[in-house]
Image (cartoon, rainbow, N blue to C red):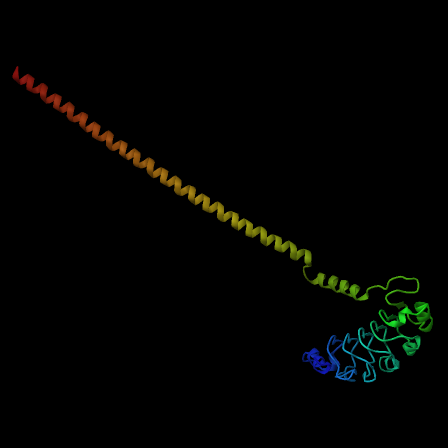
Length: 254
């Protein structure tokens, strides 16, 4: 995808003046120049053009509020004077993976008075003897070079800090990850209780059914016994009556 089309998509129905951050990494320029970016992006503070085939910054528009510029993995060899002219308030500049070989290639950055962090990692210039000392001497306003200061202290990850702050602020207005986790556990517990309750209910019903069947069997046996007892009683009664009739006959005969 070419840079113009990518920028148009990244606008997402916004006007250029409403955009504060713009990322067009891995798209392509037709002639190694910046395309589709205009002076209308006057509110832009962060711009990332990583691996887009840039060889020159001659067509970079005026971006007075731009503070962070990502230009890593391009083919820029020098001519960086456009940066101080078009982006005078830059504080962070990443030129790693470009074609910068000599100190003279970055000398133009002296005019970026607010520049605090510069990255030249994977550029040929880093192989020069006393490279770090020379850069810090050439650009005294720079605090961090390739992520470390002159005493080899690592630069703070300001973006990570910002994310942490955002998380804290969001946490004040809504349940955090821990709350979500507890809620999920509670849902799982409820599911387990329902499941267990279903099993208990089923077992109970089965037991009730078996008990009912046993009660029916007992009742049937009792009824059968009663019927047998009744029949036997009837037989005994009839036998007694028969015996009584025989006695009467004997008396008559006498």
